[in-house]
Length: 306
Length: 229
Image (cartoon, each protein chain N blue to C red):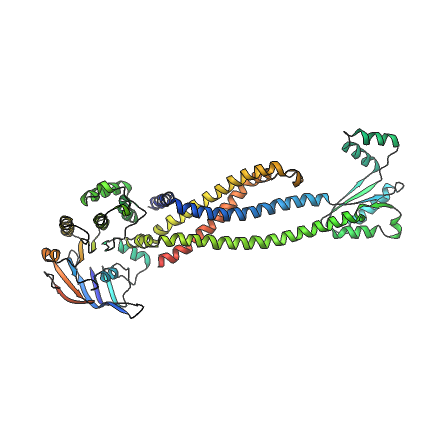
C-alpha cells in the first residue's frame, strides 16, 4: 500500500510537472538563479582560497648573508628564527652552490646568462635563508632580529626591506582578510534572500492550486496524498534547476578557462570544477531540496488547514 | 446514520451576520432516500457542507455513523469523506486532470488497484455517457458534461452515502430522468441518498421522504412528501 501510494504520488507529481510547463519553467528558472548565485559564490570562494594558498606559498622573506659568513653561523641563526612562532612554516637554507645550480637550471635555455656567469669565473651568489610564514607580522620581527648590532654585520641584504615588496605583501594579506569576512556576510545575506524568494514563488504557485487542494480534501484524500505530489514536484524542480546550472556552468567555465589561465597564476578553474563536481552537485541538490521541500511543507501546511 | 442536533450556522458577513441554518435537528437512517427542498438561499448547500465537514456549525453537532463530524482528527474526517460521494453544485472538478483522472483520483485515494480502477472508470463513464470524453479536461466539457462527470465521481467508489446538491441543474429532461433513475437504482442497492433540489417534478415523482427548508429552518419533514413551496 505504501509503495502503491508512493508510486502514485510520484506519477501525479510528474504529470503536473509536465502539464504545467509554463509554471514549471518559472519555478525552475527562479531556483536555477538561486542555485547559480549561491554555487558561484562558494565556487569563487573556493577558487580564491586555493589561489590564496598558492600566493601564500610564494610570499617569503629572503636574508642574504655576506660571502665570508660560515654556514654554521647561518644555520644557528635559522634555528633561532624557527623558535619565534609556529606560524613560521618553513626556513630553507640555500648555499652559494645550490643558488648557482638553481640559477643555471632556471636559465638553461638562456645562453646570455650562462655566458656571463662563465665570464665572471667565480660564484657570485650569496648564502641565504628563505623564510615562509603564515603571518606577515613575523617578517618585521625577523627583520629586527638581523638589525641587532651583532648580527647586522652578517647580513648583506634582506629582500623584505625593499619597500615595494613589503607594501605588496601587507596589502595582499589585508585584501585576503577582508575578502574572507565580506564573503561570509555576503553568503549569509544572499542565502536568506534566495530562501525568501524561492519560498514566495512556491507559495504563489500553490495559491493558484488552492481550489484543487480543497477539492482533493473533499473527496477524502489524506494530507499526505495531497501534499506528497507537491513535494515530489518541488524535488523535480530542484533536480532540473541543479542539472541546468551545472551543465551551463561547466560549459561556461570550460570556455572561460581557455582564456583565463594566464592571469589566474596558471590555476585551472575547469579542472577545479570537474574535480569538485560530485561535491558541488550534491551540495546544490541538498540546498535546493532542503529549501524547496521545507518551503512546500510550510506552504502546504497552511493551505491544508485552510 | 446521520444526525443533526440543534445545528445553527451563522456566516459573518461584512454588513451583518447571516444565519444560513438555524436550530436544525433531524436524522437519516441507512438506506433512506431523502430530498431536501427549498428555495435558493434556504440553506440546502450549507446543510451539505456541514455534513461533509466543509463548514463548521456555529452551534450544535453533526454525526455521521455516530462520529461527531466536527470533533474528529483530520485523518478520521478524511476517512469518513471516502464513504461519502458528493455531487457539488459548482462541480468542484480537478481542472488539471482529465475526465478519466478525475474519476481515478477518488479511487487512488482509497488505495484501489490500477486494474480495478481502469475497469470501474470505463464502466461508470459508459453509464454517464462520457466514454468518448475520457481524455478531455473539465474546461473542455459543456455544463451538462461537467455535471455528469461530477455525478460519476460521486458514484465511482460505491460510497455508503451519496449527497447530491442540485445534480440536475444543468441537464436536459432526458439526462435529468437518467440521473434520477441512477440515484434510485443506487439507493435500491443499499446506499443512502440525500438529494438537494428545487425541482418540483423530481421531488413529486420520487415519492420519498422530503425535508423542506425555508430561511434556514425546517418547515416540514414528511416520509412520503411532496414539493410544497
